[in-house]
Amino acid sequence: MISFIIPTRNEEKALERTLVALSAYTGPKEIIVSDGNSTDATLDIARSYADQVIVHAGPVRQNIAQGRNAGAFAARGDILVFLDADVIIDDIDAFFERALARFEDERVSALTVTCRVFPEDETFMDWLVFGAVLPLSFYIQNNLLRTGGSTGEFQMVRASAFANVGGYDEGLVTTEDIDLFWRLAKHGRTLFPLDLAVHHTGRRAHIVGWPKLLRDWAVDFVSAILFRRSVTQEWEVIR
Image (cartoon, rainbow, N blue to C red):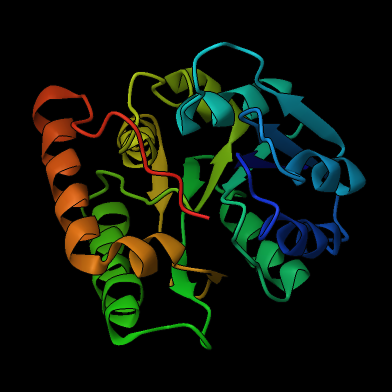
């Protein structure tokens, strides 16, 4: 069974479209929304579609690693699919038929895919980064060097491998996604299939601008490599 895990915080604009798309999957599944104490209509939307809705009740704002781990802790599937609230998977049955075929190899611990911006919203920089640079980078890191690499928009992980590495590092505000794949790659194979892709809004790059986003990514990436910590201490909420 696949456990779809979506971390949320004030995602009323995007969430329903994503949940409708996931609900169309006809294979064994459960949908889990792990919410960071939203104040808009996110929880109402989530409860209309999800099998489980987990709400963070702590006094301190939850980071995305904590949200994803909370969803994974409640999951019953042997495959965990972590995706952002604005990610859409087209032709979902065919997509997961091909994706699950990779996990027939017991050595495979996880895979990630190309995450393109919706065609109607895609800019040249979106295409360059999401459609060319990142796919090439992740193909090399996962399929050739076998060191692991991924963004957090879509990560598909064998539940036993996720448990073996201890899940996401909750001490990382950013780079928790690539850090997970670095650790998974030490315990099994991580893959980047060229025949699979999902779409998302690209909203952060569109609002904060590519120069600032690329700078933030680069600084946090280097910090994660050298010191295993994030320079960014809190992501600006972009909705």
